[in-house]
Image 1 (cartoon, rainbow, N blue to C red):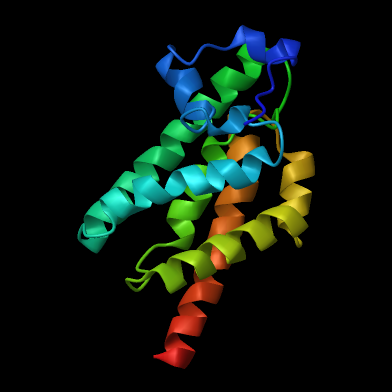
Image 2 (tube, rainbow, N blue to C red):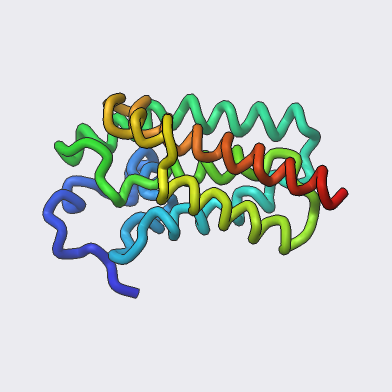
Length: 164
């Protein structure tokens, strides 16, 4: 795998720092090509660990990750000296967890949730694109992916209902 070792901004972060480790999606954000996709993939083991929890526990942990993400992404961004560097992918981890709220068991649903989230995260339909451009700081880094996760969740649950 090709890491972003030549990016001088990444030298300002350390995987031994828990905030940086999480901001970089357990290191997945260091991959040079499509770090957002790798960050979304990094969410899958986290989801699998949470999948059998009751809905209140799943929601509570996801909300905690989201709220912590405001700080985590802001801190990493400030440590790098740039807003929303591509290597910061904690927002993708949280967006995927939102997408997969109450998802049916099975790899097909997991794959569909992943694909839906990537589509919304990449295409950024309104108001996601507007939020991404206008809102800054840790909240700004997180909010577009949170909303992409909500849109993906709604689509996934709509498909569950139709197939159901």
